[in-house]
Every structure is written in C-alpha cells, then in structure tokens.
Length: 604
Ligand code: SF4
Image (tube, protein in one colour):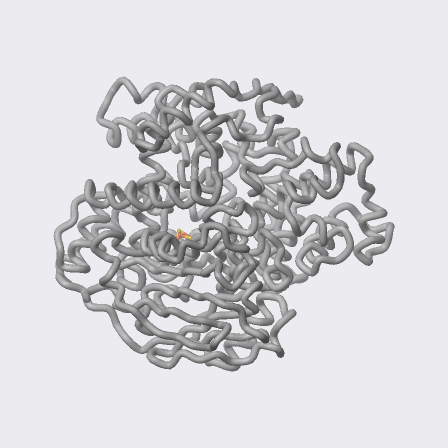
C-alpha cells in the first residue's frame, strides 16, 4: 500500500498479547484516521461498556497523509467510549508521535484489556512489548517525558498520561511532549483505567508515495498558499489575533456569567508575558503554521503553548493576572488535564464561592494550602488537587455535571456542560452559529462546526462563504452572527471539512475551519498523488458524511436522544455587562436550526 503503513496493531493489555490485521480491510469504505477509528469501535460494539472497563477499546488512528510531506500532516485521532459523556469520545493530537507510529509500520492502534500493573507499551517496528512503568507512575507529564527519553532514546516519541489520567479524572487528556495533547472527552482517563502510562514508538520504515513529483508540486503549492494566508500571519502574533474578538465579548468571563471586554486586561497582560518570556515558535511535524509559542518562565522552565487556552483559563477563573493564565495552563499540561474542562470547573467554583456555597480559605485548607493563599494560588493548587483527587478535587474530578449532583441542588444551574462535557469559554449568545455548533456538533465541539464566516464578518467571511456555497442568497445570513438562518449549512460544511482533515491525518487549522485556504479539492489532490488512486473533493466530503453518520449512529446506540435545544438553561437568558448586553438564545430557534441540520444529514 502507498501512504498507509498497512497494518492495524491490536493489543490486549490483560494478556500482554498483540497481533496485526491489514489496514486495507477498511480503507475502501473509510479511508483512514477518524473514520477507521469509528469503524473499529463500531465493530467492537462497545456501546454499553463501562468506560473504565477492559472492553472499552482505546483506539488511535493516523490518516493516509500522516507522516508524509503534506503540510501539517502530523495528526492522530483518538476514540473510545467517553467517561465524561458515555457517548463516543473523540480527540485529536499532532506533534511527532503520529508520524513515528507510521514509520514503525502501523496506521492504527486498538488497545483493550487492563494491565495488572502500570505498563509502557513499546512499539519499535515489528517489536511490540510491554515494559514496567512502576517507576514513572505518579510522575507529571514532563518528568515522564524525560524519563522515557532517557530509557528509549532521544528519537523515541511518546503518548503519555499524567496524574489526571492515572486517577481517572473524567476530563484527563493524553499528552505528547510539552506541546501536544488529545485533551477532550477523557481519553487520558480511559488510558489510565488500562494502567497504561505511556506508549512509545520508534520506527525505521518509510512511506511510499505513488506520484512523487506531482505530490511534491502539490505540497509546494499548498505551502506557498498557506504562507500568504491570514491565518499564517496571525499565528505569528497570537495576542494580536485574539484581541479584537476578546474586546468584543467572544470569551465568557467566569461561568458564562460575564463577558470578556476591552478593559479587562487579559489579552494585553498575557501578551506582555509572552513578549518578556517567549524564546521561539514551534510546530508539529511538517507544519508551516507554527501555532505554538515556546515560553520560558522562571517558575516552570520552557513549555510549548497554543494560543487561546491560556486566556480561557484567565477568563473562566475571573483572574486577570496574566501569569495565572500561563501557569494554570502549564499546570494542566503537567497534570495531564484538559484545559477547557478544567477552566470550566474553575468557573463553577468561582460562581459557587460568589454565591457563598464554597469559600476559598476552606478550599485552601482542604487541599493542603495556607488559608491565606491568594485566589490565584488556590486555583493553581486546585488543578493539582483535581488531578490527584485530593479533598474537594476528588468531587471536581468528576466534571461539573456529576460534581453538581454530588454537591446539592443549588449547584445544578451552575453546571455548564453539554451531555456531560464541559463547554468551552467562547460565548454562544454572541454568535448564533457558535450556539448551533455547541448544540449540534459531536461532543459539543464548537471548533468542528466553527462559524468562521460570522467570525470574519461580511467582507472576509462573505468572500469565503461565496466561494464555498456558491449561492448569493446565503452569504448575508451566514455572516450575520445574530441569526440562525442557514447556519445549518455552515455546520454541515465545517464539520465535513474538519472530518476530512481528521480522516487524512492533517491539521484542521490549514482548512477553512480556521479561515485558511486549503479546501477539499486540494486535499483530494494530495491524497490522489500519495495513494495512486483518483479522489475528488466531493469524494472526500462523502467520506466525511459517512464518518459523521457513523459517529451519530454510535451516539444513538450509546443513548443520545432526539434533536432538541440541549444547551444549559443559563444560555437562554440574557447577560448584561458594563460594556455589552446580549439577549438569550431563543430555544425554539436553536431547536429549529438543529432540526434543519439533522435533515441535511438525513438523520431520523
Ligand atoms: S497548526 Fe498548530 S496544531 Fe496544527 S499542525 Fe500546525 S503547529 Fe500543530
């Protein structure tokens, strides 16, 4: 096979056995990446399993372009039944592990069972073995990363869980080095339940390309196109990129109780820290966008950080101290926690403290800090307490929905989640396309259905919408953030193009999801050259629809119900801040948009 490594590696941790099957059994129908992951999970029929039980398969999949010279071809998709939602869990990671897995000879991993003791799965070409991990169990992510490098060599690449995953925090992620994370839906907790501390890969193989010259031409064209695009320029100065939307109330302040604004000082303060401490930019394998900043703070040493999550943490915890965003982000990385869910949990605590149901000195004492600790110190301490399930951290490790159930009825309206997964900080009352994306996307992943046209506004968004939809009548509504009209088209297109990226193993950020220029036809040209079979953009979009349908069917089997306005009640009410007032989302209009989206998908 060209481009694909050709094998799917099955691993049974209970019996310490492994075997392979050919990837070609799946490629015609599913192509690769996320779609094959979902097919494998469907085959396992894991719909009613305990997410922490041996029968919940943890599945990881590269795409046919992963590890090739295609731009940003660094990605791997992760799937399992989610301990946060009980539905299909999904997360995506870049970096350098995914290409290495392919060079070792494997497109996908399917990991079942539970090891009796902490273990590292080591994959070196045809050698697949299980090594003890007692010495690294309990270590934070970077200490684990360094220990693995010392043990398996500098060239080895790894996927790691931190204490959050070990302790089954329902929103623990899987990390790869300091930069990359498969954060959402608790995939790190599934890995922890298997007592799998890390997966290490080292490969000496290579990938065949069917039409190498045509492939290189396509890669060079695409790189040039990306280098001239606005997202590329924006990535070089992330605070400048975030400032206009933050000033305009794009981020929730606190627990969907306030809005970011021009005078909150968060983006400017964060930018100042970046100016003082940035030592460089970094990228995943083969990516020209380089969206990561390397920052070297005296408290932490060098870390790689992506743009908005650090600001999300400031906003959700209602703390404008710029260093808090950076330090809390790094604490989440070190503990192996999802920054989005963790930020949301902090917002839940902030509101509960303001309501008098919790007190910061009591929380401080409960997690072993001085009662005089500052707010920032308590919230930073809480991140580690959650990961290690200390004191109230044990309850908060369950996520806001379950924590509210445990803590009492007054906490319930404060749980900002969809289907059990904490909502991210962008404010859906400010953009109706965002509201639909939160409500209708798989796992509430607003980024998969990101309403880029309304984010970019009538001029730039309008030009993009005209190009994509080729229907003048939809351009105005899809760029208007206050209406649900035609937003189902945006949701449908954006999810499909994101899914194409997730299937091929390239980063969504080079696609229209991020306002970038790489469309489905260009992706199809890369795939055609790589594998030696003609694909069109329309073919790829069909694969994306098939994959989205399979995810939907899986979620229905896991108990997901009919389309309905499914966001937290708070979002149907208005919000008033000194600089802006937003009306609540109209639940009937939202339900109507969800229904129209289901009709487009032909779901019953
Ligand atoms: S855009 Fe960022 S996350 Fe995506 S591949 Fe490039 S460096 Fe990695």
